[in-house]
Amino acid sequence: MELKYLQTFQTIIEEVLLSIDRLRCFETDLGEYKGSLRMGIGETLLCYRMPSVLKDFHEHAPNTKLFLQSMNCYDIRDALLKGSLDLGIFYEEVGGFGNNITTFPFGKYALTLVASPELKRLYPDFTTPNQKIPVPFIINKQTCIFRQIFERYLQQKSIMLDYTIELWSIHTIKSLVKHNVGISFLPTFTVQEELKNGDLVEIKTDISEAQISAVCGYNKNKWCSPAMDYFVKLIQPCN
Image (cartoon, rainbow, N blue to C red):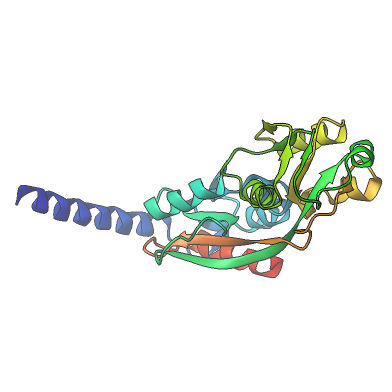
């Protein structure tokens, strides 16, 4: 019985603190809003899709404290469910997120298998089944969405690569691929410049038309502050 009362008391305290937070942060003018916004964003999205959005947000809400974290998409989903993030921008192929997360589309993005021109000349065939290709796969850790897609493809084709190099930085991954260290499978928007200038080239696969969907999400039980509401509106033209 005591545990039940403690849980009820905790719920009341949380509701009171939330109400205080609303009162303290409330401003009719977003430019004067002095609250905070905690966001988790997938690294590729943060590096390549978010800078212009963040610039616009800062210009219209300069007094809002923006706490940004580059996070794995599964971790973003879990943090939203726990309520430790206000907003998350991530790829939705994370195996579902229940009914507690409200999401808005943030675009569909193509994926490309990339290599240096020299490495492609040596190993151009990633469609023939049952082969061993002696090159490393350079990619994020195992919970990376596009890594999982490509590894499923390799398994279905019974194609074996040499080994996997795990890196966090998308820029480091691209640098190693450009220098003939291995191949990578990345959202096309992250390698557009390198494909255009010839530093990287595409290797065709049977999933060359694959796409992943990005979303902006928040816990539906969380108070939607003026800053949250404005940020969600800002990303809508990006779809």
